[in-house]
Image 1: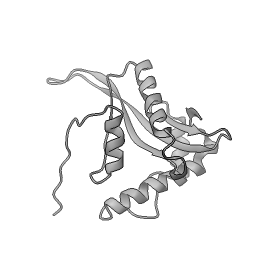
Image 2: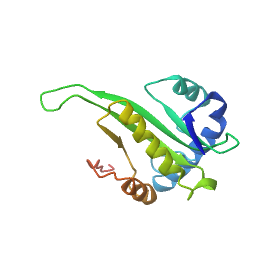
Image 3: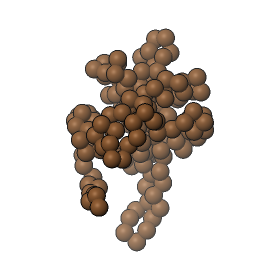
Length: 156
């Protein structure tokens, strides 16, 4: 397995994996997510893959087929009255193909992002996990992540 930046030739497989994630979210929150869709279109992915502030890394097998991805966003937080300036990497999405789960692909992708964050002098890696996505929560805790804040809602 190798991890590299996503390329245009990866788009169809990335869309397939985006659909896997969307269907999981639609099962957890059908009131918010629309089944049968994906987060990004082909055109949007083409642009995202070129954007160095939004690097997308893919895990590929020996045939260079995508078996997982991680979408990142590099963020700069400016100084304010109550906060110090710092840079972080926000993991917008991480997915391992169902057929590759249990092979440490997610762990390798996460560790790769940690390495990239260190190279870019980032202070932290942050992400959101939907309530009810227990497997993701366990995975990120296993990777050493801790709850930073809780986003709460009331549906009216």
